[in-house]
Image 1 (cartoon, rainbow, N blue to C red):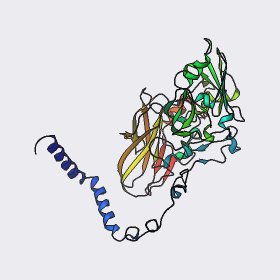
Image 2 (cartoon, rainbow, N blue to C red; image 1 turned 135 degrees about the horizontal axis):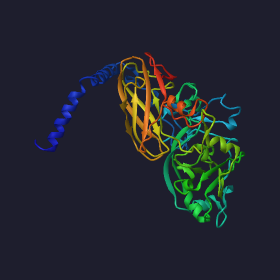
Image 3 (cartoon, helix red, strand yellow; image 1 turned 180 degrees about the vertical axis):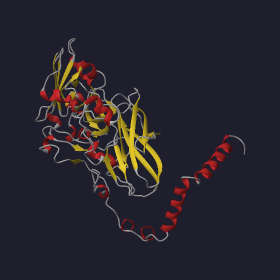
Image 4 (cartoon, rainbow, N blue to C red; image 1 turned 60 degrees about the horizontal axis):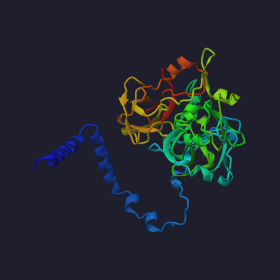
Length: 426
C-alpha cells in the first residue's frame, strides 16, 4: 500500500526496531524478566483478599480520602523553626506529587495566630478609605459578581530561606515545600474596587485579615487593579480553613505574605502602611548594610523533586525518570536545564502539561543511571529571560545574611546506593 499510511507503518517499524538497541534494550530485557517472574509470583497466581471479598459501598466515604497506603503523604512542620506552631509553617510534600496542581489537603500553611474558624454567614468584607462609596459585602453579595478561574502558584518569601548559609534541611519538602499551586475561583479585585470607586489619589491598598493577628499588607494599586483576585474556592471546592476560608486575597506571582487570608477589609490610601512586620517582609538585607525595598516578585526558580533525599533511587541501575517543578512570578517558564554532574554538562528537560503564567511547571529528564556518583541540579529560565542563579551568585550579590527570596540552584548528591543528600558544590 502506498501513501501516508504505509509511510507511517514503515516509520513505526523502524522505531520499534531501533527501540531494541542501545539503552532501550535494557528496558526491553527488564520487561522480559518481569513476565517470566510473574509465572511464580503468588500476588499474580493466588486469589487475594481484594479479589475474594466485597468492598465498601458508595455511602461509606461521603467525602473521599486518599488510600490508606498513602497515609505518609502529609504536610510536615519543623518543630524548632518557631517557638509555637500557632505562628509557624508546614511544608508541602513536593516529592510525593505529580503534575502541577497541589491537592487541597497538602497545600502548605503559614499562620500568624492560628487558623480562624469563621462561619460564612457571619463574614463581611469592608472597603473604605479613598473611595467614592464605602461598602460592606456579605459572602452572598460577593458571589453575585462575575467569577474567574485562575491557576497560580503561591510561594512564601522565606521558602528555601534556611539554605542561605549552606545546606541545612535534607529533603525538598523542607527546602522548597513552602509553595503550592491550585486553581482559584473568585472575583477580580478590580471589579470590587470599581464598585466602590477608587479616588484619583488612591495609589495603595491595605488588605486586612480577620484572624487574631489582624494580618495587614500593603499592595500598590497598579497590582491590585491588574490581576489580583478575591477568592472563595480552590480546586473546585470552598477554601480550606487553613487557606483562609471563607475568603482570601490572591496576588499572582508575588510573595505569599501578601495573600491575606480570612480577608475582612480593603482600605484605599495614598501611601503604604509602615507596619514593622511589613518592613521586614518587603526588604532584603544586603552585605553592605543596605536593603532592597519592596521585593515582591517571586523570582524564577526550580527544584528536582525526584530523585531527592526523601525519594531516593530504589530501583538500582538502569532507566531513571527525573522529575521536578519550575515557576516564576514574572510569567511562564520557557526552559529548564538539568545536570547530573554538578553543572559541567547541561541537558534540556522536557516540560509536560500546562504552561500557565505564574503557575508551577512540571519537567522531566530521562537517563540511564550506571550507579556512579551524581550531582543533580536544575536551572529554570522564564519567558522574560531571567535565569535561575547559583547560590554563590546570590550570596555575591546580597551577602549570606538574607532570609527571603532564595531562588538559587539546588544540588542533590546521589551515592552508589541511590541515597541522596542535600549538598552544595562550588
